[in-house]
Image (cartoon, rainbow, N blue to C red; front, side, top):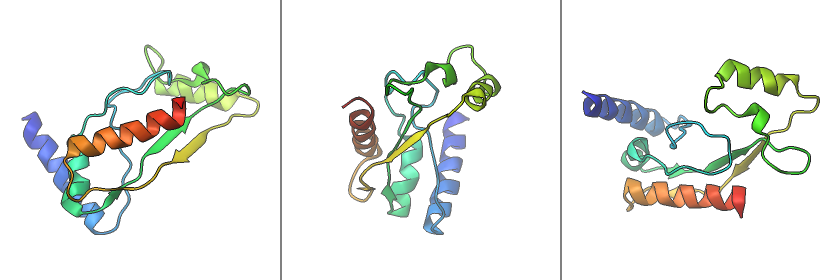
Length: 128
């Protein structure tokens, strides 16, 4: 079942985190044009709680020269990942900004609380 699969993935991720491996998850569960941040799904965040580690929110922004989001490289809607990558690689001076947020300690919090905190940091970074 889906719940059993999710529990198995959380177990694998938790084990990796306990070995001091780093993991990257995209908790929106889908892709967008970058004009908003969708609510975060919290299931994989359970791995950070079980490993008693920290979550570091990272906001990804592909800006145009004027700072607005570059919709040409968005991997959303009917655009395939290959089309998105091709659009990015064809740009004269492609830019991507990675904004690393304040680490959030996972201990003592629910996965929903952690998801809300990470979401708030990323939203504030991207949209003020």
